Picture 1: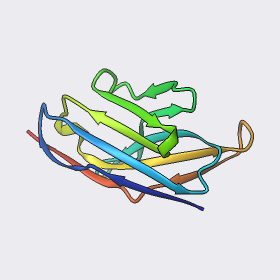
Picture 2: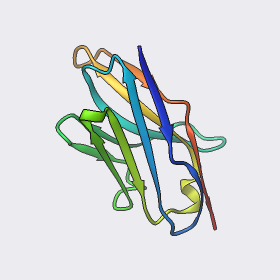
Picture 3: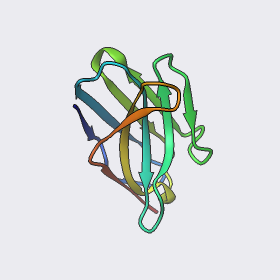
Picture 4: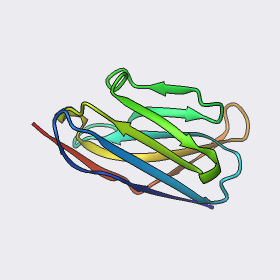
Length: 120
């Protein structure tokens, strides 16, 4: 089993910054993709950013240039640095860890979510 614990959410004014952290523990071997998703009230969960073991990143267009994802493989931790925050970034942010068995077969592990609120 994999345990996923997020931290770092909170309330910030528009234009401000926050840094989210996500620490994995337990059977973390072969966790290849780590990422962040978010869900705003009344909306579907959406991808924010992902990073693989090689450090290759993928961002949603709405956050590109403002958010930076990084990971520390030795600590099984992934970070999301969020700058120039906007009210539309308000959501519950979820950490996702993915273990691939084959290209199309994988297991997902989710954190409990951390609230990010950006005031205008």
